[in-house]
Length: 310
Image 1: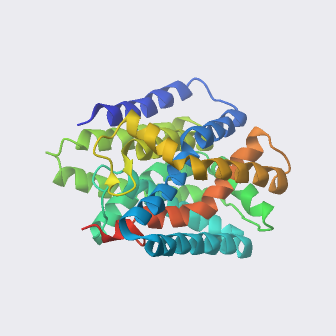
Image 2 (image 1 turned 120 degrees about the vertical axis):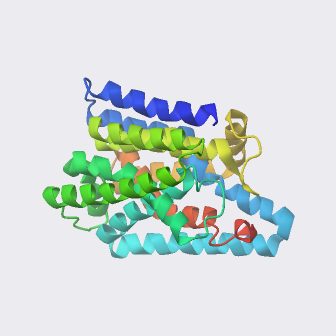
Image 3 (image 1 turned 90 degrees about the vertical axis):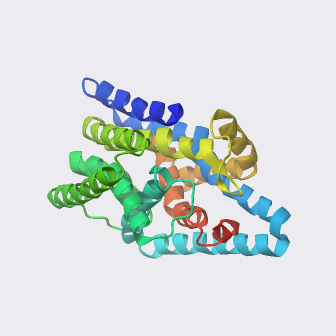
């Protein structure tokens, strides 16, 4: 069992405990998203360019161009869906995020090809357990940034707090039941402690902290930072995961990170009317709504060089 992942889960638990007596203002949660954007959010997604660059060396320009084209097409599809049906798209995005968080972060699915239906469900249950608690704890606050994103595109996302609580509680219960089933079957696996600590910590955090802060802390500490520390453009999982690998990911993702941050700033100024903390946070979330689909499918091996791995 690696020390670094356990430390990240302990950070989640520590933040959750700190949130009990101290309830931060919404601007603090938005500020966290901006910090996550600059430090690891954009680099972890922009590392996708390294996959394409390495494919040029291993399979040639034509294969890399095909990957880049498919990636661009999925981005365009996500953007078109948001423009045509913003409210539906942000709801679908939450489901996609649950699957992406799950298969990327769950100890039994991260860093390798996900082939079977049961593996997808194990990963999805992890992601649902993470995202459902904030929507149960504070449904209106959890929906608020997504309502504003949908409104910016002319949509009308209507939120029913009572229904949200029921759906969130139901989904969380099903997810935890599946997680417990897996834990029993893998009780001798040393990674079980790490997996359980992450789920318990995120549940505590979701109950104690404002929704955007709870999800932001998970995104920053577990998902994006974990991806940077483990990612390898050729084989998904680095042979030497850790801080130095995260530095390498940041360096190789810089050619795409810098313009991506610029795009977020432009979205904040044009769509949300300013370049303040809250507007940049909303712009980053909107960027994620559009960019998560190609990023997720690339690392899920739906297309590109990672698809050929056994």
